[in-house]
Length: 433
Image (cartoon, rainbow, N blue to C red):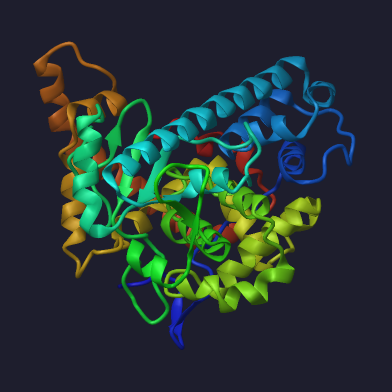
């Protein structure tokens, strides 16, 4: 599988960072968002902040709920105003409701699996929740990801259909059945994407994880329910953030990965142990430097070393990762520059270059509901026909914008020194189409 530029194989491991973020000038509101989201609460007083800008940044970086959950509302009101503090608390309550809804769905799935005699492995948020790692309301949660034995995946999905779950899509991947929905999206996996047993290049199955002793039973749930052992929880969080989504920031906010590592108490002191254990399961998709960047970024943010990380003289991997995270979330131009990688970089299971025309066809032949989401609802068939004809031209227009942004940010990034991306009006992020 071809690797992105900047990552080369060395003795079976990747090397380097896969992103080249621009230099940036960080406003005070960004320092506030990062400090209140990760540093010890109440360490420094803040004055003269633009509350609306701070709130917009917190939402973009997906730490608004975390800020409200870690800091007293009165202190937030003194720093960014009562209205902004109230909106942060509202995001916190919404996140708490989402977490409760997803946790309730996990319990229902455990009951169904117990009746069907199918073991379940919960992944991502539900695994963190069952481990007691995530405080209520501090993290967004949208779906349930679970792994079942390959031979039981299809029968378990039929059992879900009999209980009122339906398929909003029929797309099947080699590692996952079509997502199902009943108030909460449920993704049934037959393989743990990006977790590969040491010495085996294919994604791990439930049986392989169980045989390796990498599963922990959760006795509070009925039937046979498991989560990954802590080493693999850490590995999966890093691989999901770095390999699956670092070059696709519009799909996953990367500070969520940092928050997960902190919630799991992953520190630099544990890194050597991790490199000999959990890392061996992701060594073919994440480089050593990227692991170091993620771990040290989490530790530095938790220690309050935000000014050091955001210094334009700082070139350490952790600082580069933070610049990538911030720019990809707040700067539409930089996010667009990454879309070329998303188009031409193969996904797990892709072979050769045939995935490129398949991906282009998928982008061209979108459903009516997707057309409504991107372009707005039309009142007639003629309106949708016009959109069908416009779609190829729109894709060409977007492609050349992505090429232009790639050239701007990748080949001439140093010309951005001293310019604040937040204040560059043409590059501000608007809702993605």
